[in-house]
Structures are given as structure tokens and as C-alpha cells.
Length: 150
Image (cartoon, rainbow, N blue to C red; front, side, top):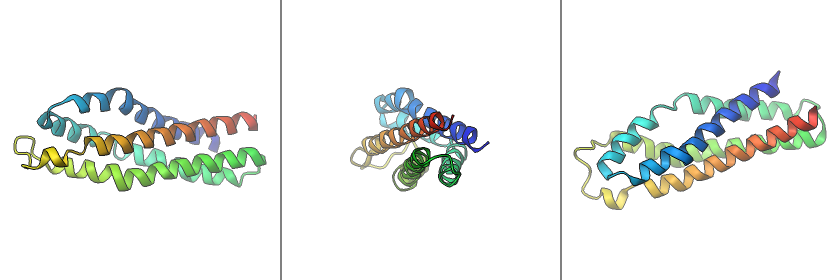
């Protein structure tokens, strides 16, 4: 019962993050500063608490599956997947969430004078690519582990 749960949660998280890479991020990167702040503030509130729940469930269930006697290789793959999902959580909390919170405090009509120097798009984008990569790699590890269990 735990394997479908981890695949669902990990798959949803990977899908959302891939969606940000393929659609959301390219759009945000092309907008004017004012439009970017407005759009980012809108998008960043849409994924809470959905994404954190999916990622935390992935970490916890993968950690549980490590000890489920499903075979050495499968256990190792579940451990790798859990660590990759945990890395995504850490990156989110330390790199992306602070940017999201800061952008939500801004008034698009009255951006700070130094916004061009503080524009978080490049920084946020680098860490978002890392999150998408780690979460997708976790999903791959979970899928291979499932294949070995079957």
C-alpha cells in the first residue's frame, strides 16, 4: 500500500516542478518587473500546502520503505529517492520559499528602487531547476525500485 502512495505523491510533486520549468518559469522570466511581481505572487500561493505535503509524504514513505524488507537494491533505491526528496524540501525551505515570501510583500505598483539589483528571478530559477531535477530523479528511483519489487 505504501508504494502507490509514494509514487502518487512523488509523481505529483515532480509533475508540478516540471510544469514550472516548462511553462511557469519561462513566462515569469520574460515579464516586466511589475508584471513578474504580480504573477509570481499569484503563482507562489497556489502550491501551498499541496507541494509541501507531497514532498514530506514522499520523504517519510520512502524512509519507511527502506525498512520494509523488499530487497537490498530496492531498499537502497527507496533511500536514494527519500534523500533526493529531502534535498528538494531543504532547497525549497532555504532558497525558494524566502523569495516567494519576499515577492508577496511587494506592491507591483511601488517596487523598491533597487529592485533591478535584487530581482530574484535568476536566483529562484537556478534553485527551482535543482528542485525539479532532484524530485524527478527521486521519482525515477522510486519507479525502478517498484520494478525490482514486482
